[in-house]
Length: 254
Length: 254
Image 1 (cartoon, rainbow over the protein chains, first blue to last red):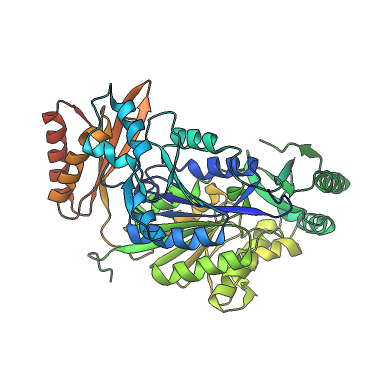
Image 2: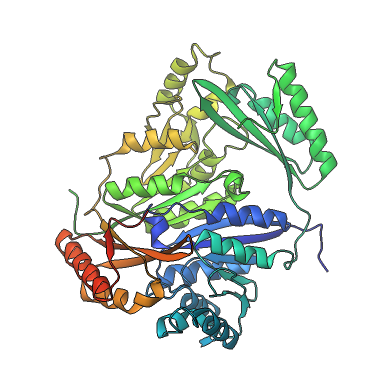
């Protein structure tokens, strides 16, 4: 049974030269982070690594041991630069096998699409002992081995795999958050933020400044696992801002 | 003098709970990656860490030692959650001091904006021995200490700091790239990609599939530091695709 009082953490490894070259703008960090939040799991760290086996092995072995869950995105396709399965198997100290269910899924998917070639069969390879994560878009499944989850790099496919995992992982209380915006330079109210955070145990206040049409503003994100403490902290912050004649905008300024 | 035949690498640490919660979509990874490419420096790894001193210290000390350069974004503002300067100083084993030039810059900037308060003066604090990186937008400078560069989290301000650093760092040959698009399932041409890459020394071919209106396509990114080898590899790949009756789109498919 889930212990809802403890904090569950996950790490994410984004695998791919295309992110490190700047060519592709990653969308999976935000997507995985948001999904984890709804599962009561906190994303504690992310690494972006190249399509290079030693880099993947190092990241997998550091992160899987110090987090409840480890997710990876990228590198599970059919081409020569897709090395995630082999690298993760090496990290786990197991061999790579063709998963019979994955093979059957791909045979079905490619039956009307030119057949299951050698390249496509690569997508049925998994670390020995792994289970599959369904992929509703393109057949080729994601892979789960113990607390490690290998997902696609293409964001729509990743989204489908996350959806298939929804509700299946043990998590704790969701971290709740509220946002309050204000047209103010954050440096004007730094003391108010610090003191308000300190007054409510377990609350964190993040301050995110922006500049728009020459005006300074900031959004303050208040987080807590306790809804009552969160609401009280938000009220106190709004009161503090208004005492400084800085009207607060509940929900934040877009 | 720069040794243009060797590969210069950099790492990036993105610091901030707002990225790990999914609230803020990171824009700095792609921006820093692209800028590094134009400086002849390769982004080798990225970590996203929380506003938590031990996490920052660990990342800084691992990455600064195994890369030519280390960049950080985020956490150098005036509020209580801005802990980057202190954490990096701890990692470097030096104290934190108020930099006299940073103080003077902030005094000038805030002269007509309510004066230099205690909170604002926090933005003049640097690891002892550091230099400043100009910030043309909001006064508060970035910070350089040896091969470590601390930059703002707000992407426009980061861009200004990168601009100020342009041409000042030793780099090697730029990694050149060309993109070729094709309406094809990447699994159909996996062998062609692998063989073409193998035939041109120092060339890498990345394959990035997409699905649009029910059609499968992929962009292939060919990379090399040698313009002639790159052009030859691209020609060979285009020829190979056309031999399979798959017309190639130079520049890629958007």
